[in-house]
Image (cartoon, rainbow, N blue to C red):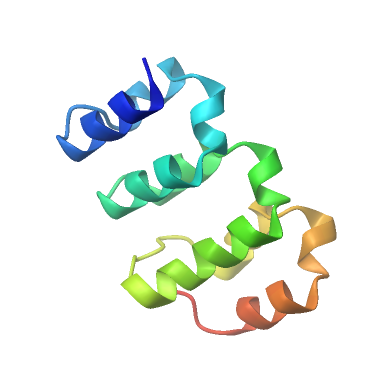
Length: 106
């Protein structure tokens, strides 16, 4: 399956959390794919558990995810402490990330 096809299936409600383990790992390195899952109401914890570790070490992605939540009012159903468990430990010390994490993101 191509990435574009997977995104279309998510939008058509034909692909959900039950299918995650069947998807190529490369999909979980694509911000558009990840955001589409979140936008369509997929379980946040399930999405976060499948996101590739490299994405959690990517400052731009993490900030984008946190900013997207603020701009689009996606409800993150996990608290900041849980969310911080996903973020790469080195990135947690970044001042930009730290500043966003102290703000209310839920």
